[in-house]
Image (tube, rainbow, N blue to C red; front, side, top):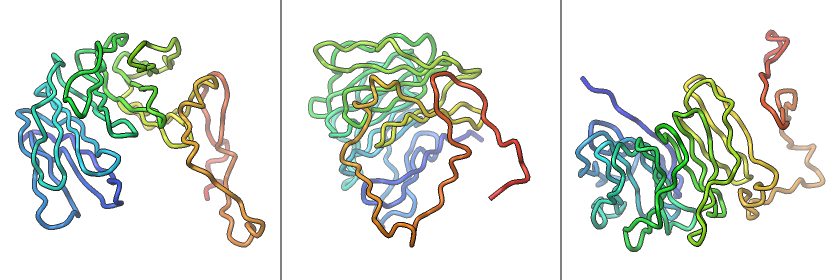
Length: 251
C-alpha cells in the first residue's frame, strides 16, 4: 500500500477542498455534486493550489509536470507545463492569477505565464537542495522559497531583472518543508518538527503587506474585545528559543 501526499484548505468561495488524495489523482471533499477526481498525472501529486478567483487549480507532480485544471468542467486546461527535470514539490498562483510559481527537486524555481502556458525567463537558481515550498508575496513582486538545504530565500521576480535578494533564513536544524505569507506581511515557515518562524526583513516588509487589509478598533471595543495574550509574542533580529516558564499556567 502506498502513501498519500494529502493537502487540504479553502478555496475563494469559502468551501473546503481536499486534493492530492492518492497516487496520481486529485479528489474533492465536501464540494457540490458533480465534482470528480482530476486525472492526468502519471505519478504522485505533490502540491495543489486554487487560483485567486477559484476558477482554476494548479497541480505539481512527481511526473515532473505542472497542470492547470478548470474547476467548472474538471478538465485540464492546455498542455502540461514542462521544464523541471525532477519532481515538482510545490506550486502557487500569483495574487492576480496571471502566473504560477513552482519549486522542484531539481533545485530550481520557475515562473509560468497562465495565458501562454510558457515559462517566464530562466529558472531561479540558488538553493543547493530540493525546493519543497514556494509562495508569492501579496503584491506579486517576490517569491519566497523553502528548501531541503535548510534555508528560506526571497526572490525578486521582476521580469526585467529577476534575482535572488541577498537575504535568507538559514538557522535551521532540519529541512524547511513549508512556507506561506499572510496578508499582513508575515512569513510563516515550518520544519518537520512543530516549529513556526515569523519573519520579514524591514526593508522588504512593504512589498509583503497587503494594504487592503485594514483593521479598526471601535470606541466601545471593551464590550466585545477578545483578550490577546502577548506573553508568547516575540520579535527581534536573531532567533532563539521561546518557552513558557510556568507550564501549569495554561489558558
